Length: 175
Image (cartoon, rainbow, N blue to C red; front, side, top):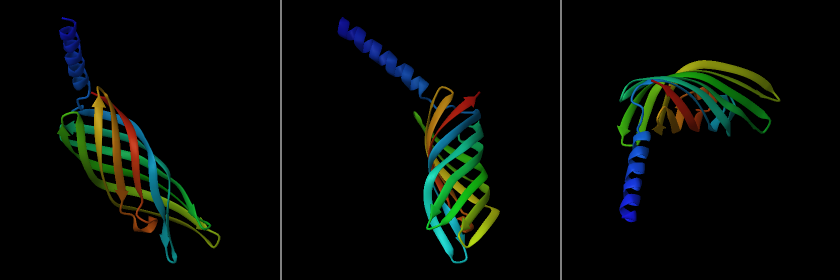
């Protein structure tokens, strides 16, 4: 009898945790992420890339189960090597396609990034900006309104040594 009661408790607990791990299908969300960035500077004879800690603020709207929209403020950190330094900051906007499978969302996103890179070395100082193609992919899980995500974002910025951000983030969905 004790074994049946324990088995019933385990089954009920698994059922409740499965219900909690379901992805939120729609709503507005806010969040943040922290990770490793790769950025640098490319201009004339200068071409270098380095890694640093990057972070971003996230705002989005998941309109449908398989489609959402997202905007981010991204700081790719400060990179430096051999006396040269660069800092890239950006705003990006994406259309997000979601493949919802049980307990997990796999997603890809495409959009545009508006960026600014400030760089310097002992011989020069440079500030560049522009708008370019951006892309990303990730995997996320939701526990009620709280979501966690592992994500890669790439920015097709030729003047900034094609920066990227690999991050772990947290979001909160307002239904």
